[in-house]
Amino acid sequence: MLNEQQSGKMWSGRFREPLDPEFEAWQRSIVFDWRLLDEEIAASKAHASALLAAKILTKDETAELRAALDAIAAEHASEAGKALVRDHATAEDIHHFVELKLVERIGPLGLKLHTGRSRNEQIATDLRLYVRAQINLVVKALAAWAGALVEQARAAGDSVMPSYTHMQRAEPVLVAHWLLAYVEMALRDAGRLRDCAARLNFCPLGSGAVAGATLALDRNLAARELGFTAPTANSIDATSDRDFILEYLQALTFVGLHLSRFAEEITLFATAEFSFITLPEAFSTGSSAMPQKKNPDLTELIRGKVGRIHGAAEAVTLQLKGLPLAYNKDLQETQEPAFSVDFVPQMLKLVARFTAALRFNRERMSKTAQSGCLNAMAAATYLVHKGVPFRTAHEKIGHAVRFAIEKGVELGALTLDELRQFGTEFEEDFFAAVTLAATLDCHDVTGGTARERVRQALATASEHIAGLGAHTSTQEAVHAGS
Image 1 (cartoon, rainbow, N blue to C red):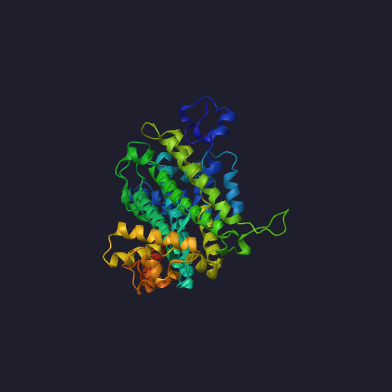
Image 2 (cartoon, rainbow, N blue to C red):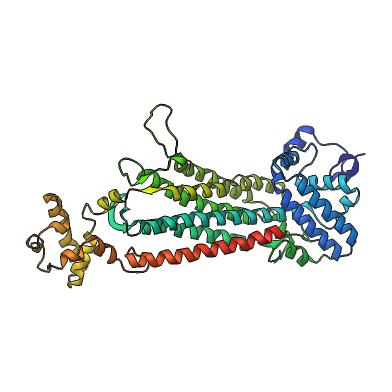
């Protein structure tokens, strides 16, 4: 008859037959959940503290267990050490691996640590710790990208560019105003991730397999040690909840979407047809066939990565759909999608350096922003201030624009007599109202491209980015303390 000590399994007492070898290899999760070693060690140390408080462990036993756990973490901290975890011959999962290593180091005391807990609560805890740490990395990287955008916006000063609607030139805007649009996206992304981190920050330890621990454990002890807000409120939900993984992946999908929009615009603006931007060579590649080429590989790859992120979110959605409570082995399949997006912090770091290295063709952008009657909205606003209803003003300026186009000039180059054929309201002050500076500054509202408003927006954005940095520093301290 098989038993736990003979088979090395954590569950074998009830079984008489060994597992089918192919099935055993197929169902093991150590090949991907090895990434959770640090989280498993931290959670195990916290559980030891709870067992000590419950008088299941002595002080000496607790100290020995915690020291052994730290030694296991240190032994496998290097890349070679991580490979040893991943390639372990018999461990089913990261929990089994740590138990086997504990027994190797300290004998039967290693088996005592599993008292009062289940792997169901262990994996739920490990994954929350992992996702929380990943969110911290992504938020920190978002802050770096937003900071690079702000620095470019400051450097741009009062440089102008055309804005677009329907991919057609619309109105002149400050280059800084365009860059700050992406800062707003990054700040929203960070906010979503922080919201996710706040919602997941409750500790499943003490939930048992489904109904709660059978020992009188003080769940607050483990929660505090791991930096959680509090214990989870319901053991059934705690062991089966993977909402936080899905929410995390959905939040990352927004990050990917915004990066992809930025990448698309940079790719367009770097073409000879636009010539707004010079691509930094350090982030570009050439063609093996055409010697003159400089290709925007970084921005193209960013556009492509969005599919992988969204695909991970979709995979988890389908895994969770229709699962009965509580833990089911299906939940194991939510782990790899969560691990598959660990490239996002690095991608953001690269985008931040890429953004800082961008060079803008300000003369070309300014010239483009002042051609094609892009001051038409400002011209219509001029007539509104003269008491003309906007719809009428819109029509009058539309006629003037058509006349200017046919003549091959800009609105400001028409004579006063030419303008007055479209309305007697035109006066000499019209020409001052449609200069580039006036066209920018007539948008003098919160969120507008007026020069003073953009200067204020830059200051506000810098404050918000600094706030993100303070948040990530706090989270890093919590994680390091675990």
